[in-house]
Image 1 (tube, rainbow, N blue to C red):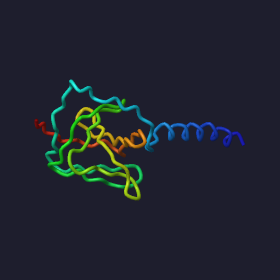
Image 2 (image 1 turned 180 degrees about the horizontal axis):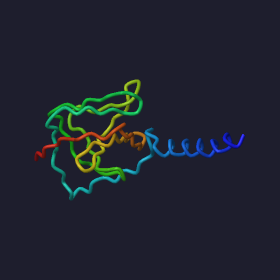
Image 3 (image 1 turned 30 degrees about the vertical axis):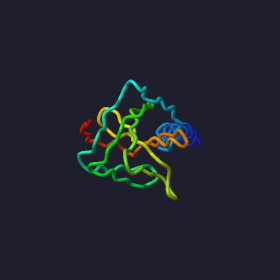
Length: 130
């Protein structure tokens, strides 16, 4: 019985750590770019494949163009120029990229003010355009 008793704290610790490492969407506070900070357009120099926790994979196509529109605690937020990016089940929601230090970290879902992290950050090969 003593061995069983030592398993309970270990199980609680594992559950707590699992909750901290959750990859489900979390509430996010969006801070828009001020008008005086006119942002140049960034373009992807190659396809980027992003995997989200629900098992879906999204391909951001080479040549797609993005403009920095704000920031979250997690990183800078980029809105697509042209065709909207949609993520999620049943047609999904509009989504913006969230990037920091040259890596795509996840998606910002403006309709619900949520941040959806990727399973693993991926390199975001942006080239700057005016």
